[in-house]
Length: 253
Image (cartoon, rainbow, N blue to C red; front, side, top):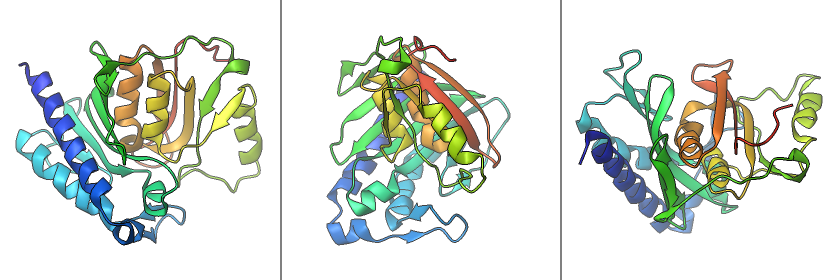
């Protein structure tokens, strides 16, 4: 087994263990949450920290630096080197309110590009993994992006991340200009889940502004592995991005 295969197996094991722990939690435990004192629209739960502890305990011995939502960047970072990027609970609001799916998201990036990503869906425990040059699978079955070319027949997944500026007068016009060309728009409450839908061909495109790297790192790897394309650029805050991913067939304008 190569080193990359060994690291992928470790990430899959970590994601599944954390997702099982989250899925086993009782309803009162799941519902415990608060809002961030820094970002008024960001939900935080004790589960975020608990799952992160489980994941970091297994990733740290590899010696590869980790960027995680709760812990930030751990020691050992070198520019252009490999780094694990972890969101221990993507879709916390979904999780604590029982609205929809959430996920454990673990990716390995080298410099500015993904090597692989792993997404484990909560509560179904569906496990997806993949990356450039290795394909993408969900539950052991290959995934492939859709073949739709016309945006007027396509589905776009999007959302309003906690850091996105919704107060400027231009925000509504910018949002509607972005979604208007599509037949349908869906907000799933977790970027990793949305990107998984693009990777498996259920949706055709994903776009968000000021979304955090740990929210999308694994999902972007899945889209590339499934034959899609990705674009991202720095946002206003550290580790925030403006992201677009699609099936590689949709017109951009």
